[in-house]
Length: 570
Image (cartoon, rainbow, N blue to C red; front, side, top):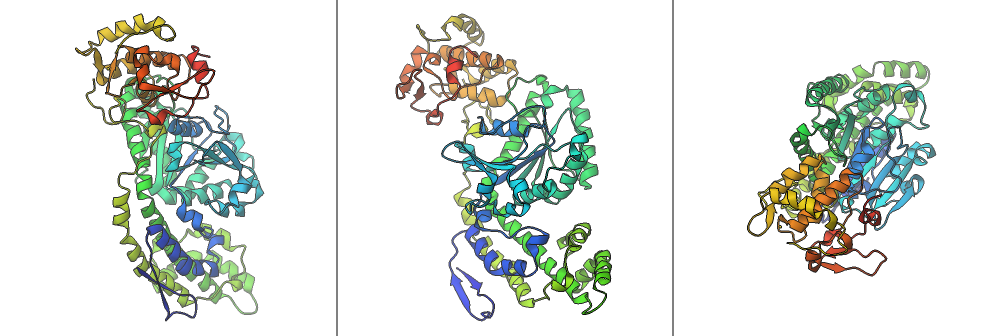
């Protein structure tokens, strides 16, 4: 149980309220202790709009930023392993909207204006940017299990060259900063062939570099260059980032190719796998540590709001009552750095709690200092009580919540594979029956696949291990994400090994993917070996019936393009 202080004039009266979760406690603290201070000193107009319940209840959010054609939308497709409404991929600037990709029962696109007025989501504060932004924003709802745990934000490609001189109609940097303030992770993507940082990109990085602990850098499309070139490009990227970030240490850089095409230079496959595993582990931790990040965000916000109150009240107190207001205002703005230093010494406010001088100078020009509120110590005391006492009470709930969700993981998409899969993060020593008849589309290629199978030296049970199959499948140069899916479909009896027929299915799918076809979500009737029909149950009758294994419930959804695939390609 926590004791929460009442409103104005009720300092002696305490209301005892039971708080059962960290998020519930943060909501109550914010509304009763911090929000009154923010309202009085216009905090939302200078820094970040007031928070609502949607901000506290929101799933962890990942913000993707990068210049056009660096692979932001492709990265999202790679995570979800499926297309989504409004997805446009190309070498030119194709994504011209901010897209919030969230979980929903069915595919649906919601316009930005409708999304921003819905109190169930955390986007209501975007209304401050007006219709110019909201007409270029949309909510995309997709029935993907990945999105049950996280929300993904796709952003317009940052422009370069002459294009960056075109005005978007809204303050692009301010919108990105708004999303960055609320994101749990910021992924900045760079194309291995396009390392230049344009002026617009530089301004964006300047806006979000205060969130360096959230930032992850991805050097994408790294399979398209040789090892020697990769070393040089990595060094050049680190040098460029160091100049922009202006810190002795630069964010972690992950190297890889986040698409499902065959690798052009596969000598770095093991490096790409290790880097992807590290990045995915970071993403996997987001649902488990979401409450801690929200707590940290509220604490940072409270410290900044308190400092902001000191600044505005000081400026109000320095203004003359009658004449010379404009000249005094200009003098105060010009000497803002000295004012910060004075408040630091007299109020014992850490230097790190102050906003940047340049940012505040730009904003203060528009305001009448005589309209600022005088310092009301009662509101400051409420925030101090929140930081010194209430936050500590809420933190006591963290161990219990973390213990309850310690095994919670993101599932589905690129995360949805079993440990027995030889293409999973942990590779185990794995080591799978036979016959075919009319109707099995792979039967005409079995002689070719049988020869490869015999070369892998099957055991006495007529099966080859996962490691042996892995060595053969990686020769295709397909990325691990694709090979994981192929293994999951091929290991029909799920024993961690492949028999002759299962191996034929795996190699057939590999060949079709290399030829440019998509991998189905599940095996159609013509792809199922006759010897494995007993593992499947028939779905409702259709023109092209499809089957699902009794023990593979995750492959229940139909694949829209499966018919074309079954008939041997497009």
